Image 1 (cartoon, helix red, strand yellow):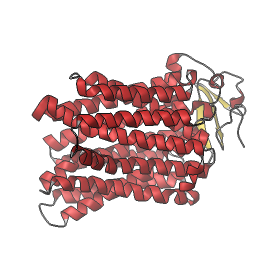
Image 2 (cartoon, rainbow, N blue to C red):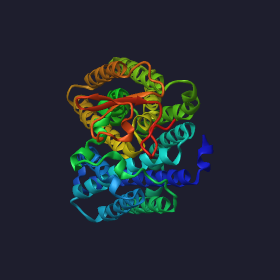
Image 3 (cartoon, one colour):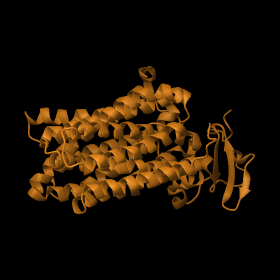
Image 4 (cartoon, helix red, strand yellow):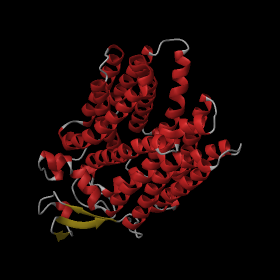
Amino acid sequence: MLSVLCDRTYRHLFTAQIIALVGTGLATVALGLLAYDLAGANAGSVLGTALAIKMVAYVAIAPAVGAVADRLPRRVLMVGADLTRAGVALTLPFVHQVYVLIFLLQAASAAFTPTFQAVIPDALPAERDYTQALSLSRLAYDLESLFSPALAAALLSLITYNWLFIGTVFGFLGSAALVVSAVLPRPVAASATGGGTVYAKATRGTRLFFATPQLRALLALNLVVAAASAMVTVNSVVYVRDQLARSVTDVSLALGAYGGGSMIVALLLPRLLDRVADRTVMLRGAMVLTLVFAALGTITVAGSGAWRWPALLVTWAAFGAACSMVLTPTGRLIRRAAPPEERTSAFAAQFSLSHSCWLLTYPLAGWLGAVAGLQSAVAALGAIALAASLLAVRLWPSRDGMNVEHEHTDLPDGHPHLVGASRIPSGWRHSHDRPVGADGLHAG
């Protein structure tokens, strides 16, 4: 898997991702402590509002970035986002009205991440290399969730939490420097997309999702993952501290089990995806998540027993493993479905639509758990996961392979990409084995 790091461009971009993730992790810890300083016992409401602002920024900003991405050099967009995040992190400890700054911070992340994701398949055109890059990216996210809190705890034994924001600033500045030093591949000319209004460009990626069977299935899979990850993120502390009466340290162990399960699958997937279709891996991952919800229901209704703690750790690890089965191949799916000139819009749509699912499941997991009890939360989120899994199976054609059928609603008549396409009321429908090349023709 590490052989992909021999590519200089990807090596610089991957290192930039790691540094930025560590900086973000430090900011998360520092923001929680800042919220306690500002609101005391009401710090939870501050963090809840901050999380809602984060999701709203992700959902609203990413499509707008997709609309203007073809007008800006990708290096400028990514470096500008990093510098904005660094500036906000530097300001946060000194401003009491933090919500506007949090929105700016997350808006910059919504600009950076889809652009970064769209650059990688251009930098690594070989399918095997790109698959390895996706697995490394998944590992980076999981390792950050384990490493950043430990690093923050070590630093807090020496300094006050305000200095953690300085670490965040250096993380984003380091990311910007690495992006500047990378030789980014030349993007496809903007004219290849056929132009259109700002609204058409902002919704291009979303329309591509709804026009492509495989991507419609991905929308349902996003909801399955959101249900599972919300259960872990929101209610881990409730299970460990309230249900099982264990220590604060054990909360970290539970979250570590989730990350560990995800990392193991991310390590195994590159070889597996050489032999097994994405559809098989992703749909089975979704079905496993529904089974894990059933196991969690058993743990939840059991009144007592020493077995419940190890069972919870295994359940959390299974959640992480199954989520990784769905999430890791996602980039491959989008890469195949979207022509190169539409990749930024497609990744922006995935970023926005997936976080729309979390915007639903996060408050649902918290509200149901607090008001109706954990059993109700498990039942509701498990039902959502099951329904979305079955919908994904129905939406994703069983004969998937490399051939992707999809529609184009914004390309002009006579566009070279439409050679062989069939006319439909909303535009044109066709399929091809590989994404089109920069000249608008089928590549192979």
